[in-house]
Image 1 (cartoon, rainbow, N blue to C red):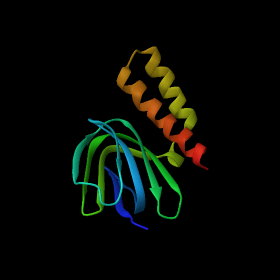
Image 2 (image 1 turned 45 degrees about the horizontal axis):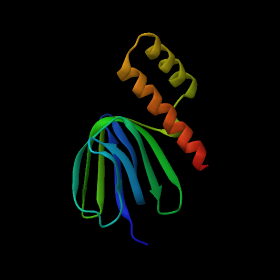
Image 3 (image 1 turned 90 degrees about the vertical axis):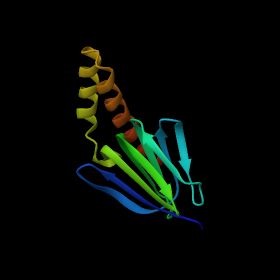
Length: 127
């Protein structure tokens, strides 16, 4: 089975590293799927969930907020300003953040909270 090596790194830590069959991320050009053998890519990451299908059949989902994605020679680097794995997200806290952002009409904070909740819901759908 063909695979690519993935490094998901946030400004403060290495979030996840391993082998995958496909990675889907939101870029400035829209949702982008990267599989082994993909043409080289360098793009700006938008706030959104990143889904990684691991070579053992598992799924890793992270909420990512800004950064860059780079792919060449079957190596994918996701360099994010902020990234949280779905299983690290405190759902109650994310829901409170969403409510606060909505009440303050803060579109950016609202999007960040929504993405965190999407990542958690996406993970539960794959378990």
